[in-house]
Image (cartoon, rainbow, N blue to C red; front, side, top):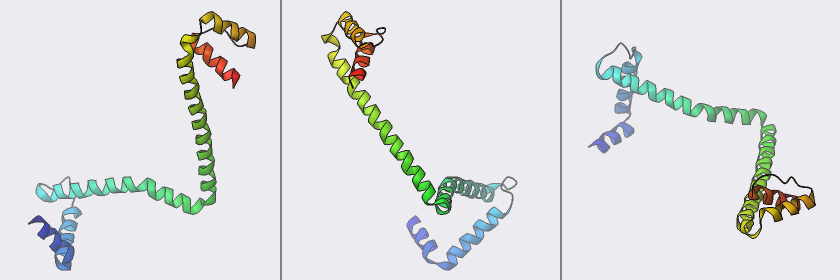
Length: 140
C-alpha cells in the first residue's frame, strides 16, 4: 500500500502538486506556535532541510574554492600528499627498527650495548630498548 502511494506521488503531477501545497502551507506558519501534525511536520521538514544544508556546505565550499583557485589548490594538495608519504615512510622505518630491537633485545646485555654506544659516541643512558634503538639509528 505504501509503495502504491509513493508511486502515485512520484508519477502524478496533480498529487505531487497537492503534497507540495500541503507541505508549503504546513511549513508557512511558525512551527513552534502550531500544534498537532502541521507543527510537527513543519519542524521535521525544517530540521531535515537545515541538516541537509549543513551537510552540503563544506562540499559546496570545497568545490567553489577549487573552481576559483584551481591549480594553486592542486599544487598545495600534491605538496601535502608528498609530505605525508615521506612521514609515512619514516614511520614504517621506525616500526621496522622497533621490531628488530624487540627481536634482538635478548641477544645483548646492557653492558655490551653501553660499550658499543661508548665506542660510537652515542648517549649511554636509558633502557636496553632505547639504547639498541639509538645504535640502530646511528648505523643507518
